[in-house]
Length: 271
Image 1 (cartoon, one colour):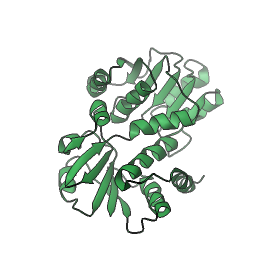
Image 2: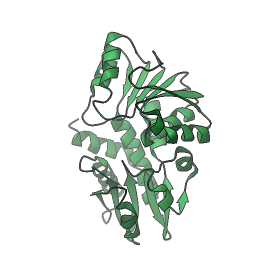
Image 3: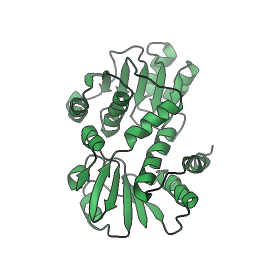
């Protein structure tokens, strides 16, 4: 059986390492997993070319929203979030799922971050920010603030909040209205959060907990500053690991070998 991760750019993806480790641990010698560079324009043709030998696909930027109208079935969570990071081929149909949300929740709880955060600040307004919103809603949060550069481009995030039933307020990215959130989630690329690293170092904005979805390069300046300030820091690797484990379970029908996947991923990242 074949599976792959799609996105553009994609060469940096750690997903092949994680999924191949899972296949080895599960004894699935005839399964393969590759990385395919694919943008929104090429996605329909690529999906159409996935025949009976395909088990599923992992999706990353910029495809998590673009895939939705191309699916036959979409699970409720992916519909609420407005993004699917997983396609499973079943009986000739394309089924969309979102494992980013449970991946985030598991990464946070694994680090001891449990219970409903009273104040949440999310950096960014894209598809991953929508998953972050669903994750904090899953933890019991009633509201969240999103720091965005262009409020006009945050319409999908606001719509996700309405579907999920969680209040979302927008604030300026450079001047957030939240000074000390219980939980800060950065969904922006490495480097984009550097101004928040500076704020944490100055003591202007110090969260209680931080989830930075970047896993390479690691640590980011944001994670370093937060760690030095005594903040509980969760990196992008645990989130990537657990969302990949969810994908493995969906595609293979078997329980994912999380520790084998973790070991392979950490080895690939240099420990």
